[in-house]
Amino acid sequence: MSNLRLRTTPIPGHRDSYTGVDFNLGFHVTHYDLDLFYKIVPNRLEGTATLTLTTWRDLDHLTLDLADTMRVRSVATASAAVKRFRQSGNKLRISFAEPVPVDTEFRLAIRYQGNPRPRRTAWGHLGWEELTNGALTANQPNGAPTWFPCDDTPDEKATYSIRLRPDQPYQVIATSTARPIPTYLATVNVGEFVRHQLGRNTVGWLPRGVAPGDFALQQRMLDYFEGVFGPYPFEDYQVVVHEDTLEIPLEAAGASIFGRNHTSGNERLIAHELAHQWFGNSLGIAQWNDIWLNEGFACYSEWLWADFSGQMPIDASVRAHYRALTPQDFTIADPGPRNMFDDRVYKRGAITLHALRRTVGDEAFFAAVRSYVARSSYGVVEPFDLANALRPYGDIDPVWDAWLNHTALPECP
Ligand SMILES: [Zn+2]
Image 1 (spheres, helix red, strand yellow):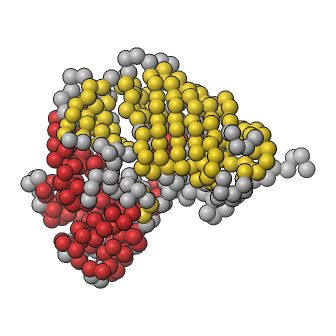
Image 2 (tube, rainbow, N blue to C red):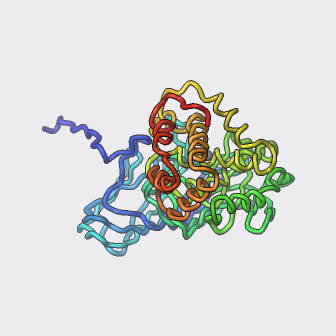
Image 3 (cartoon, helix red, strand yellow):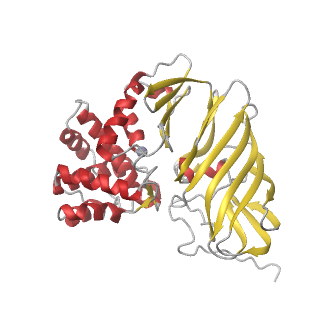
């Protein structure tokens, strides 16, 4: 019997089919309190993550996601005796001496340390990333466990308080939010920044000697999107610009992260990242296959801004991107993990919204979008939430089905 090795086979519903991460079952994390120290040289992160959990069944053990590069020193809780903990396969498994009963709220304090580094994934290197002069986190979709223990799935939202103390002379822009967000939107940025007040509730953190450039438009853009989608969902909006060149900007809760290459000629990306505060950050998706809900709206917002600011009428943007859409070999309702960040998900998602707008009319479309946003703020949405908001205004179902559930490209709306 000792030679018998049991293979664990994936059980449907127990694993995220996009990220391949096994779900951590039996509890919800409602708050993450991260108290961390970081030494740029030699890239050393240490501290304590205190998680507030609520059990939804009796638990004799639980698991969390944490990269094996980060080593746990101790696990403590006041309400249950921790029997043991161990790490393997990017999971931290914690066993209790006595089961923690269902509906118990308790805190887990996890002391850990290590040299954080990005993980290699199908979507490139994700997670904690050292820069020439600082560091950032690129979590989406499953990089967060490279720097803190968490329940890394998009529909498990929690509030955050992150304090990270770096060595001199570095500063930190990190997430603290009383609004529930998924793990991938928690961010830490370490660098030498100069603060620029960009408007009433928009702040820029830029490298010394770098002018805000296109970010000077940030407040005007935010005011415009508030008019279109409803109130800005977070307290303020922070734009972090790193000294390094970044391939793509990143959205985070109440913040967006750019490279210095994005300060001019990238108005479109500035609009895109800002729009994610409504679509993705406030209205979260339950499953990664619904990524078009985030990216379709973010992309459509680029075109809305281009139209509003007099650069290009919306129909011209739609036509130009429609022409570039072929070939289509996946549906955007479920593009598959390899295609989840494919530009065709973004653009077809945006054109889908335009097709729906053409079906119900401008006024009805934006009223429906505002009600969709207001109804699900800080929660989790699924495509039917948007469909239900639109249905009272017209027969959207044939359009919805053709654009989302089939590969063939319908006519340009
Ligand atoms: Zn995006």
